[in-house]
Length: 303
Ligand code: ADP
Image (cartoon, rainbow, N blue to C red; front, side, top):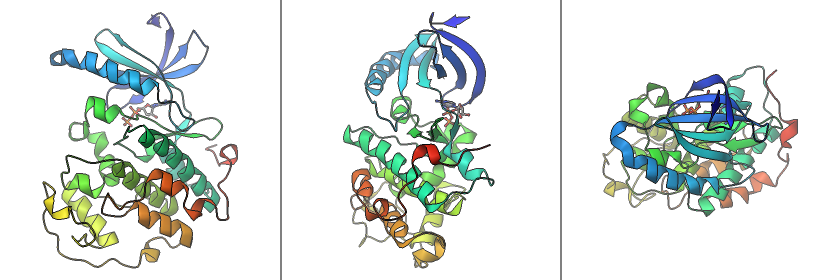
């Protein structure tokens, strides 16, 4: 049975943040696609309209490192978003102990991640929910960012969905302190945490609550102080944490090169105004020094 006279439904791929995702064939192009069915509550009649308008803008976000939003339409009270189908994601790659990731492979994944971010940030679109399972990997090894802009349109349903707790590990300190105004720095922080996870093959800062997340951040990087981050004490949920000094950064990443560590530290800068931008990160010497990033189709893939 066709949906919207165009898509042939196949199996369910999983349950995501906003609803069920299923595989389908686009009969217009023959392409395999992933359709995200987004439940729209009854009381949210207006959301449909606003969301569709915003989604129109997301359709224009076309870049090799962004998942293409092919189509969007309401159907039986649900909003359907049609994306290009991707084989796997970075979380699966990181967790697969049979896959060896060389320094050049890690560099390639980071370069693709930052290219996708730089493109969207240039257009003033934030991701806001960066985590390894949102970095999808295609058949030719291309990494593409998924769910761009959806967090803003549909809200961050973090607290309502238990499977979403992992997103906390990638949350920037300004968000944990309740900042209402924030910028592209939140995506850079998350990308820094993903960089750290690629290096150590384990999530970097695994907080069990928002307070504990800040505790984990401060234990790794040293307590944030107003001298490093002047706006800190004015954040809505600011509380003083007991001062701890940072251990040598090097000791946290025994296998990383000096260039990798330098870039990572710049991505994990406390003050979002001082944090490196995606474009600056791409120009960092880490990406021009040896070893050069692995070409995507040479990246290791799950058997
Ligand atoms: P979450 O909100 O938890 O990040 P998603 O809604 O993005 O989850 O995805 C739910 C499931 O659908 C996951 O198993 C994911 O791998 C799969 N999925 C999402 N988007 C795609 C896609 N473009 N191609 C293939 N699988 C996808």
